[in-house]
Amino acid sequence: MTSRVLRSPSSIRAWTILSLSLAKSTNLGHPSSLSNVAEHIRLLWLTMHVSMNFKFYARGHPSISSIHPTTLELTRDTGLSKNGDCIIAVGCSVGLIDLPEPVKNALSSGACRARLTLKIDVHQFAVEGRGAQGLTLSHPTDIVIRKSGFISDRTLMVHADRAAADIPRSFVELLQDPRRKVLVELVAEI
Image 1: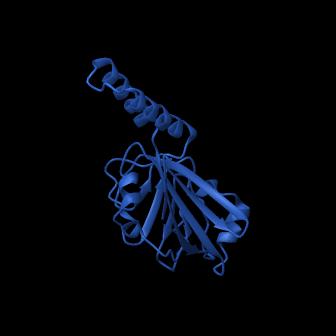
Image 2: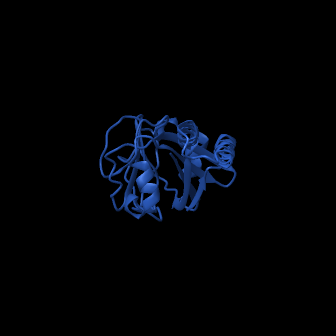
Image 3: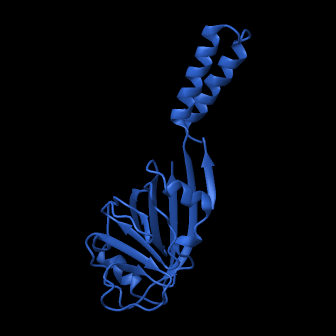
């Protein structure tokens, strides 16, 4: 897992303004100096963001149909029936319960934006959604992304912009090859 904290130009600019304000405020007992510093701290807080990346692996399966219109799922299970029309990868190296605590904490916030990217060789597919208060991220095998706001122990993100049916058929063909190793990258930003 990697984190980027305060790397945006606006955050760096806010830190610079705050530093200059503190350096110029020799009389911190003066009310106007304190209010200026407080305002700069407030502005800095508004520009801060944290981005966390977590990578894991999964595999393809011949029975992947990827036709579900509202969800997509990755699972640690290695088998797949024809009824699993939302499952897009099997044999995941992690379940939701295995995610690092900082990632779980970010995802269980309504302010979190999340992106899950699947990569096979030079091909990739990404889905973006939101974290939500109430996500437990506790399921041992399943990772589900939903277009709706429904929350369960299997839910990774809600209000996603894509589901299994939105994956291009050329990418689904790659996912149907059990020899294919799928790199999965999860990015959570607050």
